[in-house]
Amino acid sequence: MNRLWVRLSLAFGAVIFVSFAAIALVSAIIIRANVAEFDSTRQEGQLQAVAPDQVTETKGLLPVVVKGEVVAYLDMTGNRSRPPRPFAFLNWDAILLTVVLVGGGVAILCAVLMSRSLIAPLNALAVTADAIGAGHWDRRVRVTGTTEIKSLAQSFNTMVDQLQRNETLRRNLVADVAHELRTPITALQANIYAILDDAYPMTKTEIAGLYDQIRMLSRLVKDLHELSQAESGLLPLDRKPTNFSETLAELIAPFRTVAESKEVRLAIDIPANLPIVSVDEERINQVMHNLLNNALRYTPPEGTITIRVRSLGECLCVEVQDTGDGIPAEHLPNVFERFYRADYGRSRQRGGMGLGLAIAKAIIEAHNGKISVSSTGIPGEGTTFVFEIPVLTAETPVGIFEGRVQA
Image: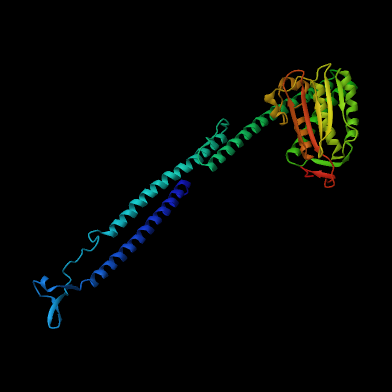
């Protein structure tokens, strides 16, 4: 009784059975009423006038005398011309009972088949869910059945795709964190052991090396903390009215020296009369640092990095474009995912853990903006990152915000 198909079968069968019973009851009432009416009419018509020349036997006949002559006889017996009782030879109670039982049985059978057909996709979904729970991430359900069942199947498959992607990212997280932690910890352990073993003296140079390893660990912990805040919607923002032209000018200045040392040209296209924006300046600088560092890392000598800012009415559009190797098209949808790296071997040497862009995306979205990336994947044509942030209006709140603030 606890199975859905059983309950549906009983519900469908009960409804149809009751319908048959109601029809049979109404039919029986109508038939009985018609038969009773026919009997009453027949009894009233039993008094019949019979002409004298038609009478051969006067027994049971009442003569009708007019002016001393018998002009007719009344047949009081009702034996002449009695029409048969209609359908008297049929047992209507048995027929109606048979109709109800046979119709109800067929109805229950159809209800069982229909309910099993409706429940089959749900059973398949349950089986697939159990398989996925056991670690078989390649399982999917067939999108068949009614519109609602198809919608459920599509939503389920989409959910499984996302779960599989998260599981892959989780495994990558464990591997990446283990790798990134292993390197500085191993170096710290070896250097400290060597100093304790008097293999070499504890000079400022050695201490500086240890300090660099500790800084790497601190940066990793800080990035992981910020990412956890961003994913939980608790990234703190200290938003204030900001002149974006001045902010970017101050930010870009240190990068000029780095770009010159790498023989990379910086092209700046920032209008002086940009509208005021309400942003956390430190967080926006963090985004720009990440984008410019990536551009410098992958732009070859004699290449160009272009920083362009445009006002689009309700928002500011910031572009960072380089002329590096670019990003293959198949990797573009995953660029902002945490711990995702298109080239693991190269990224370990030249890049970080793949957290920078994920954090940048969280910061921009916390400002009610959006960020995107485009690239042809052709060396020399590079990559373009674009983010938009709303400009300051009378309704824009300022001050300290937490989470994804709605401006």
